[in-house]
Image 1: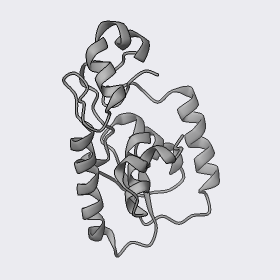
Image 2: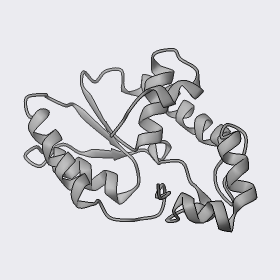
Image 3: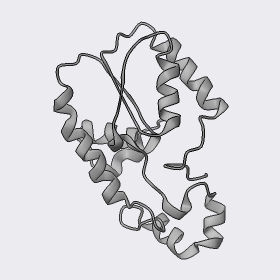
Length: 158
């Protein structure tokens, strides 16, 4: 696994294919609003999913993925050798340990909770498309159905 949360890698070929598949799957769904992460790969996904629609995309910073600091664009195998103490601490207690120069889970979770608190701003919309990232979406699902934040790992978002 390579940590690519906030770094700006482009959408991969697989990501493009997934977005095009979503375009087909969601073709019959009428969206009133699109909320999207600041990251270009999420915005690219939104453009592909909505390629035949003229909907404005509202950028929401709270939808950005967790920031992994010095671990961005690095493989976990490298971290086990090059930042072993911090990486081990994070693996053993991901809710409290903080990636080197990164965002801890508590701060990340609070940011996603701020987005959840903002959802009332959008209550007059019928169908909202949220384009974000695995960690954010998993946490959103857990919290919106009343589960604790640590339950986010029960949901597969691909």
